[in-house]
Image (tube, rainbow, N blue to C red; front, side, top):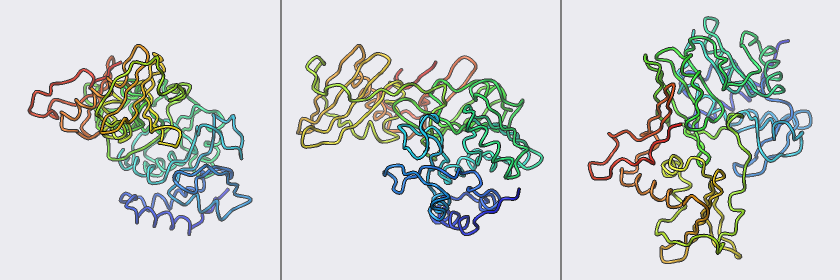
Length: 400
């Protein structure tokens, strides 16, 4: 079977990415050779606006609208709730998607994949990324991609074969297990990895000088995308890239979601305190919340907007200990802090944030990740410190 592609759609996507500066050099031909529509299911969910609801879309019923969505720089959801929610119902949690083309191409550029490379991809999804990789590495290279969901894996394998990429080794497997080919040049994860839990086989099976690209996260903060380089000693060190991503977690890292803010924000049983630190930027801005995410990695956050019935509230919750904190404006630059449970979450968050400010507010790119056989850490190296007495905080490093 020979697939056709909508040439106008491909050109539209290329033009959109180029005008936005989201098309890395030399990727125009890659998009032309591997059209996105070959890997998108006929039934899917899309958002018409960035913050709008997901809408069901059927190619048979609305072919023009389907093509327009496929050839736009948008996320396309292909599965909700692990497949438990059937199209056209919009589920609670997206569990598979075709990422924005700008993100996919940005990751390929960051990984610096080249002809002849041996590549291991974690999270096959629709199969589009694996096909792009196969096109780049060519006949002298190889691509192994793993997908833990049997339905998604079977569909992706079928799409790859139909599109002429049967040489891709598409496996039904758990990417956390040791299923890598020997001596790979590149490992690319399209699923979020919790800090302290990057599978060490990814490092052990990568050649010295090889690259591992993984979206790192905690429960409080999604991202950043970290580029690790494996050294001669088998240790991987990495720094955050400029590319910001928001991938779903590795399935083995997922836990049931708990509502953050289910408690009464003014619960009289909570301990009462005050702060002059407004919580909004520390908890919501990427660079600002990362020191908090490292200090309390299992903590989750939520922010309530102000309404006629309640004030604006910032929430922290730690499901491991059952601790929570609410921060509410009192006026005149002061905030009421209520904390409950064995952990004083806001105290830990504020201390980490103040420490980060004393270090000169270094960006995400200043943090350094280190992966060894028995230790994983993320820390601000000494050379990022200010020449003052703002010493090193133990909260700036997490090892498991």
